[in-house]
Length: 273
Image (tube, rainbow, N blue to C red):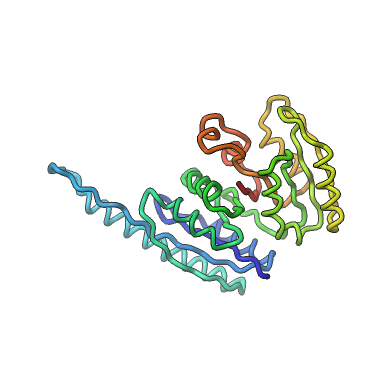
C-alpha cells in the first residue's frame, strides 16, 4: 500500500517556507509516497467594540485574511511548479480555520494521512505540539533548511518507554526502506532495560537491517543535543523519537527531551506521541 504524506502549508501569521516544500517533495519522491498539501485560508473572528475606536479593526481583519489568501495562492503555485519539475503528482486541498484554532484543525486533518511533514520555526511550535498531542499520527519535522534525501540510516532514541516503542512502530514505513539502524540510549537519569533494547536490536537485525547500539552519558548536558550529535556521527538521515511521554501540563512546566528537540533541531526527526 502506498504511503500517504501530508504537508500543511501555513499562511498566517507567517507563511510556510520554500524549504518545507522542497523537503516534502524530496522525502515523498525518495520514499515512493503520495503527497497531499492542505493550504490554510485563515479566518479572523470579528470582535464588536461597544465604544468608538480610532483603530479600524475591520480593515485589519480584512487585510490579514487577504494576505493569507495571497500567500495560499503563492505557496500553491510554488508547490505545483516544483512538483511538475520533479515529475511528481501532488494533491492540493485548501482548508479554512479560525485563528487561534489553526493548530487544532491541522491536527484533525493529519488523522487522514500516514505522516504529516512539518517545519520547526518559532511561529509553528504550538502547531507542531497540537499535531503531536492531538493528531494521533506520527510527524516528520524538519529544521528550517534543505536536508531531505534518501534515508539509508535511521537513529532511534531508545529509552524503553511505550512512547519510544510507538515511535518505532510509526517509523516502520521508513525502516522497511532503510539499510541500517542505530539505537541511541542516554543512561544518566533513566535505567535502560538492556534486555528489551537487545531484543529490539535483534528484531531489527532479523528484519535485514544492520544494527548498532550506542550508549551515552551526558553528565548534565542536553540529552537531545547528545542524541542528535551521536546520530550525526553515525551518518543518520533521520532520527526517530517518542514525543511528550508525560501530560501536556507536566511537559509545559518541567520541559523534557521533546521540548529540547523542538528548541534546537539539527536534523529531520520523526516523532510520535
